[in-house]
Image (cartoon, rainbow, N blue to C red; front, top):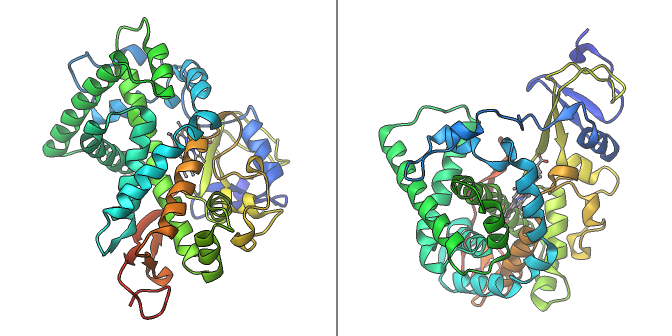
Length: 390
Ligand code: HEM
């Protein structure tokens, strides 16, 4: 008998179309995230790590670059320990002023009409993340190219595309060599970003700085898109609710609380994925090795405390929310991401002349695990209907 034919206990559902076991309750999600038979699906003891690392003046291949990421190789424990020391709520808070200044800067530069993701959220959230990594402002335009190409190629990899044209490979090589030289400059320079403290510790005594360059690429890939998606989905809901928009504008409602509640309901990532590594019956049913476990983040978030008016903020503690994961792999950038999103929304609702977003015109594609924005049209011209577009 296979899992597809087994009667499942409440909180589990077999998704026959996608061939995976959906987990829908907090108790079962906790079990899956702690169970030693259920793993992230990556090999942490690759014997070929040394062979993966390119020479100092050579670029890795596209697939080789993704294998250098610290979460998928035997550097995980060492990197994770150093990084967790510096990605703290306190160090995120030290960037509050930088985030607010950048949000205002990109709001002021917005054309009168356009797409909110392109004209505000992307420049604000990319550049504020570069600031967290300690990248000097003169490098931000080049780093934008790095972040865009890495994100594009990573999405292709998830879709199974591993063949790339000559022009794309050349562009990749150029941005890799730039990223490597920037990494060396950052490590040797006197920048005092907390991230650079960890990066210098991780690089000390090592023969190559490629793993640090890959780490910087990985952080950009991991963080920027979900923050853009989370902010845009929150903006759509805020502009659907005039009382909420008014409360945020007059300061009676807190942007961080609202963003937390809106991302609890509609998390940027749909699922946390895990794999069964050894036969087990920890869920009360026999699970075969290789079974794909998909923890439904929104279902778990809302199982005990359904969505409520966001004017009242988030009704549960951050630790009871799965939006940023839980346990050993809890999001490294969660504190910074929460503050970047909240600061961006706070500034957006207060912009003068005001921004108008028509919630009905916002298009979000939910077919991949990370939601994707298709359109977030806005205008700053006076509107005929108050909240919507003219
Ligand atoms: C709204 C924005 C964000 C969301 C919703 C989000 C969500 C998540 C989730 C759900 C996980 C856990 C994945 C799992 O257990 O399988 C995760 C892990 C991670 N996130 Fe985020 N993230 C965001 C922003 C960021 C930012 C800004 C950074 C970096 C600066 C970042 C870096 C990471 C890293 C490195 C991991 C892997 C941690 C580990 O395996 O130990 N994320 N994120």
